[in-house]
Length: 317
Length: 299
Image 1 (cartoon, rainbow over the protein chains, first blue to last red):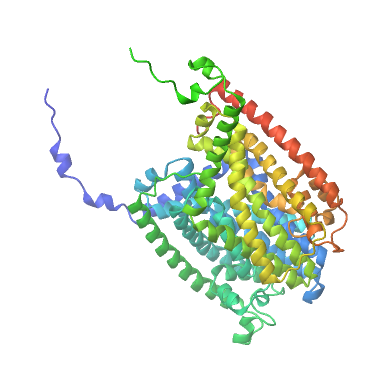
Image 2 (image 1 turned 180 degrees about the vertical axis):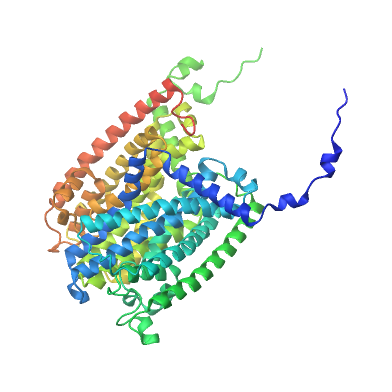
């Protein structure tokens, strides 16, 4: 029996189709990755347990810091206990979102490579690898945002945190939150690039990296207490401006994490603290630089991983 | 017909050279086999430290920065210098808790995901040897991290220690580690049973335990919650006992039992957790053989 091939179909191969549909394809890939990420995050248990798991960690972190303030008091800072507590609670609650966002892409690499052994298949799929990772990271970021929200509600109800909703600068809050998502995911992509090169035990790397950022981004204490060199590191970090933007929006009359007595910002600019416009511009500029740098590093790591066969490597210890 | 030479392992066993009687091993054979299993399981962890140097940065340099952040919180609040010491000791001991959670409690589940667990159940060894090997390997790794955080932080922040009972301090430290890793061995079996929840449990128990154990402040300040933590969590009781011994005479550490009593609590915890770990791993092994699904990936 002879087999006939339809040569007309082969010759009519449309090379343009391999290019994909450009932006539309990217958006579809991102949406699919977000949905997949959310399912991976949330479908392992019932919704109530999922919420409990999501919020316990940020609330415990919050309580750890609040207890430190409770024991020592804020007398030496020249501010009231309430002011300091609000400052710390806001920073700590936002941290839950940041940790989730930067862990998302990195854990996605580790999960898909080491546990589910799917990374190589995802990599050769028509979707762009970077878009997949951003989507997975976005899903985790959304879960982290839920933790942030619940931690804030907990702080208001249980810890007596006072937020005057009529005084909140809503446009600044919205802009800061949205603009902050990009550099957070960019840092996550940077860590994913590192995890592509390292072994299975890299699970704790995002937490460790977030711990280091904790020091230089004015999350729970003003940058003014840091040595100048660390203050500079903080000022070029988009996370610093993201936290400062949200903090200024929620407590417009509260202390600034960037300016103030003894700070590099005040010494250089002569102003007590950056205003809303400055914060948004700084967030845009530092965010864009961080995103470009993270993308370049990721591309380089991806190339190396492909050359050395690291995409389907499994490790263990 | 040529007679096949006896297998050297069978030849030295108690029963003789045929497989059935050769499986009746002497106590010495059992011990040396389990010891080899222990060393074999610890080996990749210790060796991996050399092969993957990135951990030096991510698990020593960065955790130091986290500890530094908490120190600066206290400095910004104008806290007494003793609290800086409390944070430094907490930061160093946290290395062991993280290791227990990430590399002990969740480990059997990872092994299952990787397909190694079936091999462990099939191999002629005691599974406690595997758990102990994991603990020894992890202990080496986290000891390096803890020592580095302690030394660097002490130098950078000028922490002064005042130890009066060195012997008790060493005993408490060893007991803390044995109780912690005993708990880790027990959790390894539990997390294996919980399946996919294991990863989330791993992620969940870190910060809450930090809080109830008083990672950055004396646990006595938590009142009833602190007392409950001292009675149940080795990290809490060990950290408090070590703080009392390392910063002897500090007026800020109050409301908790003396180090001697806490050492006894640690002894009890070590025994209880190890016995429970042994009982649970045997049950798990039986379940794995009976059901045939427990050791299969992604179940």
